[in-house]
Image (cartoon, rainbow, N blue to C red; front, side, top):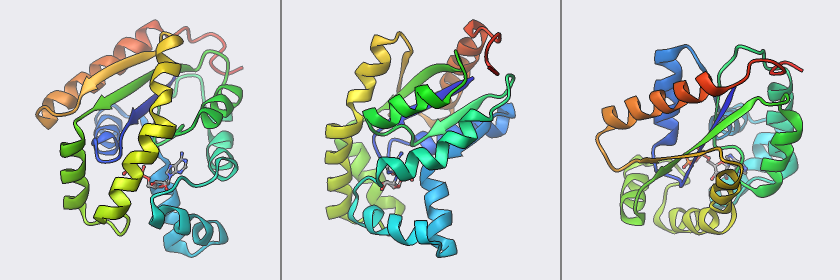
Length: 193
Ligand code: ADP
């Protein structure tokens, strides 16, 4: 089953996805981490992506879909894949539906926090794309381009919301519980084509 982690930059979804994967033996796939690995390795893709990331813009859909599609297409029936940072656009969401095995997308977990909290967390993180100007741009891009996915998954009956302003341990147990509940409802038939 695929569980999509949705939410603004700085909301802590990466931290939650990593912790849930670690404690439950699930797979964590972070497109931000994949891109930073490409940047670190100095690949062509990394060099191209870095320009977008440093500005706080989204990396083009074809690049991102290329990164994720093969992985999703080859997932096994009993695997739990936490998708962190993908999809971020409607086109990516549609590509994910095409690539994923029939019935594999179980739910989208949306983490919420106020803008003040987000900016404070992002500026405290100190990544190179975490300067005030870039952070504000990333939040604008999120509101305009990624937030519509919340309604997209709500309309599919897949959306679960988590208040990410609470204590980290509480968010953690909520996250695991919601995904386990999703797993209990997933029909394993067809999960591998
Ligand atoms: P955050 O945790 O702050 O949301 P990420 O680590 O997920 O940030 O991503 C960092 C940057 O990588 C994004 O600002 C964006 O430029 C790029 N990126 C990551 N995932 C995607 C995606 N699915 N589509 C387009 N760009 C992406």
